[in-house]
Length: 83
Length: 83
Image (cartoon, rainbow over all chains, first blue to last red; front, side, top):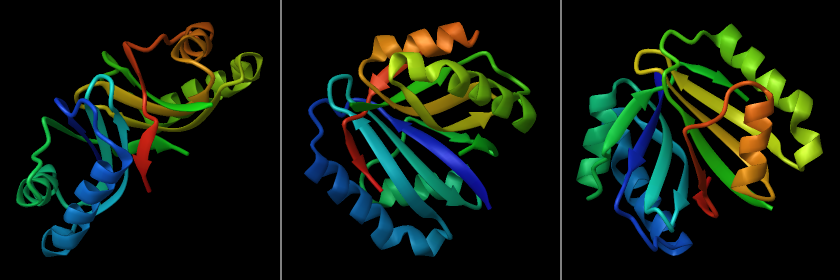
């Protein structure tokens, strides 16, 4: 399993409720792909959303996001991390 | 205090050791700016690094990164989040 950071643009004005609903939609379908979305952060001013997930491939991450109705603009594997 | 996600590009080939050293350099100077860098993730293939921090302003976050020798290419306030 690999960690992924994906990026969505064009989400200007996104609210906490909308981000939570989008995250819930991901959680509802992610198991089929062996993906787990852990956290998400949004900048409502620029309309940028970052999602952190763990999964078998970027394609699997994208399939979850696509099925949930919000395909990502970029998906980066991030195997290197500090916390 | 606000959460920020900043993005660095051009870091192709970055290793866990290099990311940890960069993070440590941030931690060493962040207190002066009231900033705390929490986590960082890197995609060595595309050379993209994402850093999650908490601080008073994007300028303060950038001053820490600049003093540590690695100014960010983008800094986004991310007041909206799910975890």
